[in-house]
Length: 471
Image 1 (cartoon, rainbow, N blue to C red):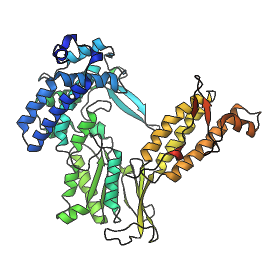
Image 2 (image 1 turned 60 degrees about the vertical axis):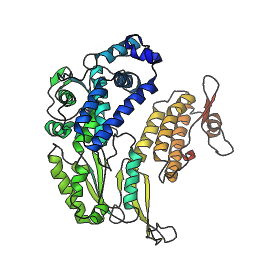
Image 3 (image 1 turned 45 degrees about the horizontal axis):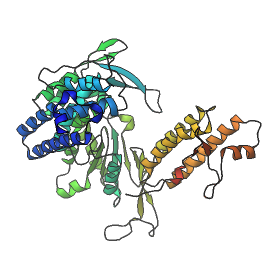
Image 4 (image 1 turned 90 degrees about the vertical axis):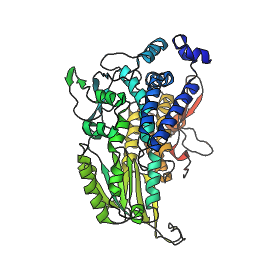
């Protein structure tokens, strides 16, 4: 096997031992991470160069772009997609991170924002640039993982939305706090290129290649436009560059706390361009807002006024706040069901995290839209379309207080499906319709079931069937 890997030109793509290549790349990434932790910049640059020349890293980058990513069949301005094994091998041989950095413009695509009339611009690079970005990201990410702040969770390996929610819960579950809930306006479109490149602090070919991508421009409806700011959404490396640009925000806010005890009271949790700042003193939150606004100006950004709000987790007209689709709030409650302090004293309130009203409304609208768009479709087709969406939504919220919400969702979906069924059979009785589409079982009276073309039984997944698992 090792002889075949050495003889790269005749190696069969379909027989590639991907696990072995991933181990080779991961070992190099660990060495970069450790060197960055030690502050040995020279060693970091050498290892990054070694990884960028690695055949294993190139193979993984091409595989991710042409086989694993959702946009694998989306072409850039050159109209090229590399899908066959032979063309993938050619692409691997073309990947080079050199001092003479070049990049082609991205293709501008406008997609609608969920629940709005606005549209969001995406920049689609050529497939060669996407693969090269994946290669550069493999080398750059482990270095910055050694520097990144503890409470930054967006688009980082091994971190996600639920980790951010857990950090918020740990911060507020023992004491009510004031919260600055903020969002950065058009973060990916306005990042200052000079400030970002200066933060990279990298004189290697990687920095020159990133600069070439930032300055490549976009082609929108056949017209070329220069890019003087921002990192285009749709690029493989854009989330990492956004995290690098926003690195230092937490440290800047923490400068407001002058003692170790004060630093423990102040918490900032960030998920890319969305973040919350928590403290028991309202004046500290107001100071933090001013500091953040001033700091963002240095990288060409500003807070979005309509999405920036100061609230309290327990008191006020609208207590609590929404973050990443969850609603976090503290409820007044009796001493027997109250949360308790570290010494067992009742706190008089309990911190509950639930799906936000916006998330519930969007999910209901999506379910209704799917059923409406399948007016004449077979029952099995409707079920197969709904089930993945129901499972995905339920799995996202199954670690919080969601049982009542799940039951309400099932009730809403039943009403939508009943309308769907009665519209199909306007001359039939309700009893006939119920027998045709719903099968009562031992546990569920209204079980929406059917059979596929192969004769296999299929039933609608119920929201309330999802088990709540507290982490």
